[in-house]
Image (cartoon, rainbow, N blue to C red; front, side, top):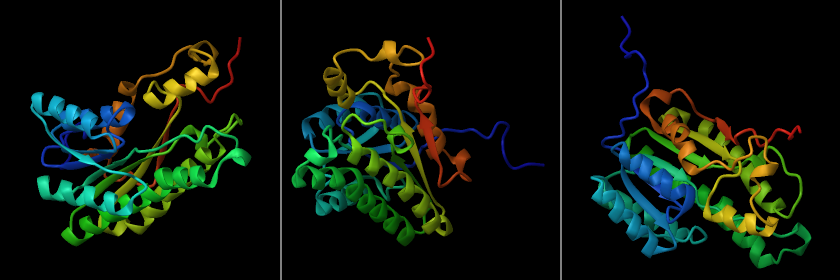
Length: 262
């Protein structure tokens, strides 16, 4: 007789400790609320402390556990301190959602060195340091864990438009996911990635303005998805039932990679 229930699909995260970066708005805020709703204690990390505190209050009022921690993804000390703060409050962080990111919104040859360093710092160096810090503590504690990195459909396809470095960093995140999944498989730390397409968020609001309005009519399904439509994928990757899934990058783009046929 099997030891697994039918179906083996629990999303219960009771007793788990999750750290979500970029949690002050958009996808990150939604990710944090979703994890808290399933029982995880959530560490909310971003630069805008006032927004984090408001979200922590919302989660707490709904019966969850949350801690607001100010963090700058370009500052290694700040990144490591966020993990330490979460561990001090709730115990070893065993779920990491590496969500913090920024667009470059400039042609490659027009970018300043300062902007290049900032994009690389937020989109790649910070997530790498954070993943390694979480893994180091999990290995020391002898605990399994789940790391979910947020890549982008720009990893799969870039058509120009002034976000070349962003696309490069998101490909690096996908490759980082694959490499670290191998590095830490022996320790039962699963590393996967989500590659979203265009979703409604604070980041895309600015992009829509630059594009001159609502892009929905130009998309295959004539709509821009909302963060709520990513809940199931996030929960799948952190829930017990996906224990054999590691090194995967899951694209969620609502068919946006397809060409529109009129």
